[in-house]
Image 1 (cartoon, one colour):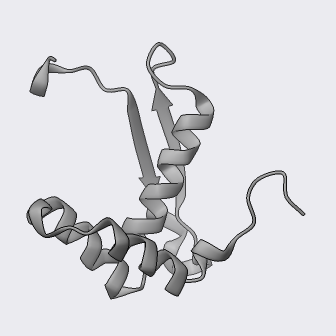
Image 2: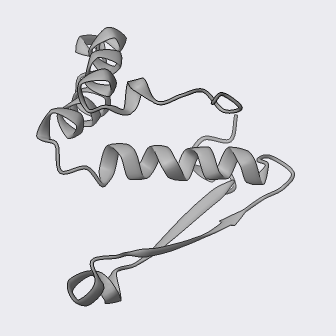
Length: 96
C-alpha cells in the first residue's frame, strides 16, 4: 500500500570476510516482529540462499526470468529445478 515508502520488514546482512579463507559467508538479519515472525524470516533467508547463492546457472536463470520476464516464468520450471537439484526430494518437517 505504501509502495517505495513501505517500511522494511526484513533486512539481511551478509559478511563475506571469511569467504576466501574459510569458504563461509556469515549472515544476520533485522526483522519487524509486527509483520514477520522469526520462522518466516528464516524461511525467506533460506530462499535467498537457495536462489541467489547457487552455483547452478539453471536455478539463477529462474530468478532472472521471474524478475525480468515475469510473463515467461513457469512455476513448473521452478518445481522441476528443485527436483533436479535434489532439493525437491527432502523429507517434510516432522517426517523420518
